[in-house]
Every structure is written in C-alpha cells, then in structure tokens.
Image (cartoon, rainbow, N blue to C red; front, side):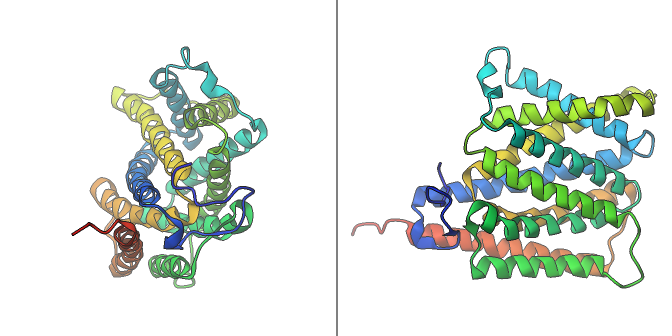
Length: 319
C-alpha cells in the first residue's frame, strides 16, 4: 500500500525515519496530510450546521438525518447497483464496531454542541488524535518518533491553553465531548485496520447503513417535522459534509500512518473559531487565540518536516 511504512506482520515501525521512505511514499504522506486539512474543514461545517439545527430540532433527529442522508447519497454516488462488490467485507464485526464508534462520536459531539461553543468542543476532541497516536503503536505497530511526539505534545499544550482546565470550572457537557473523543479513537483505529482489506467506498456505505438502522427506532420517538425548506436542506447537507468528510478521512488513513496524520487535525480550531464567530457571534478570548496559535504552529512544523523529507529524498540532478 503506497505510503504505508509497516512491515508484514505488523512489525514495529518508527514513522519518523526518513531513510525508510521513497520519494513516492513521501508524496503520498503529503497527499494524506492535505486530505486531512480538507476533512476537518468539512467537519467544521458539519458541527456548525448541527449546532444550528439543534436549536430547533431534537439532537437525535439531526444525528439520524446526518447518517440517513449520507447513506442515500453514497448509494447513488458509488452506483452500488453496478458495484455490489464494494460491500464485501472480510471483517464484518470490525465494520460494525467502526460504524458504532462513528455513531457514538456523532451523538456525543452533537449533544455537547447544544451547550458548548464550537471552539470548546473541538479543543476537547483534539485529545482524540493523541489517544490514537498512543494506541497506534501497540494496536497498529506504528510507533511515533521523538520529534513527532514532541510536536503533538506542543499541540496539546495549545489545547490546555484554550480550555484552561481547573480555572473557573468546567461545564458538565464537557463529559459528552470526552465520550465523543474516546469513540473517535475507536473509529480511527478500526478505520486504519480495515483499509488493509476492505473497500473505502464500501466502508462509507456500511457505516451509514449501520448508524441509520441503529437510530431509526430512536428517531421515531423524538421526531419533529421541520417547518421550512431551509431546515430540510440543512438536514440533508449534514449527510454530504459528514459522509464526504469521512470518505476523505478514510482515504487519508489508507495511505498514511495514523501518527503522521494526528497533529494536522489541530487545524480545525481555525475553522471552528471562525464559524463560531460568523454564525453564532462567539468571540474567542485571548487564551483561545494564543492556544490556537500554538496548535497551528505544531501542525505547520510537521508539514515543514514532511517537506524536508521530500527534499532530502529527491534524486540529485546530474551536472
């Protein structure tokens, strides 16, 4: 698999060792990083829409629409009637676990968004990639090196600056974001494993189907009919931003080790702060700006490092 530095049998690999990579693999790593940056932009729009809709409709109804519209769009986008083979999986149980991990992430995150600002929920969720990086070694055999752990640690320091734990108390809804973060770690790790054997397109369809079916009995009990075409349109858009965002995320995990991608999720803070101000009038304080600067700085450092690896591995031109 292009860009995958693991050896057969999941032998331990230091994902920071430049001498292990070919120029093609390094280009694949940069492509994966770009996919993650676009992915978090889509997720930011999704969260903003979910928070807006939750002011008018039950949160669980918004969750159901997010997955049902995602599933319906994916059927037509991938033309399943002509490509039934993409639904084949060698690991059905793991597919269900992955789907439920994504569903749990969405439920807890959307519920937290009812009570917390966009910047609050995203900074708490930033602990997810740290947990993924920590577990990627024993679970996936992808061990982060010293430089990458340092950069991730600096990024998490930025998260602490934003959240200021212990100063002024925390809203009870923070526990919902923590639950979403744990579910995300399960989703991310199972995604990485399944990309070795299963179709990325099929994974997107299966996750939508499992979550939609699981939520259907629930949505019947909380259903409230939307009162405007604009609300219907926003509900359907959640499937597009969520589904396509996770398709990009899965593509990125298919070509790049999890520890490499983890720090670049931090760029989402920029989107969330901007959208929080534009849509809800939330003005970030000094600590939010300072923390965001630290977080983005750690991601930019790692992007610089990837470019340096690219240059050092490039062939020397002949005189």
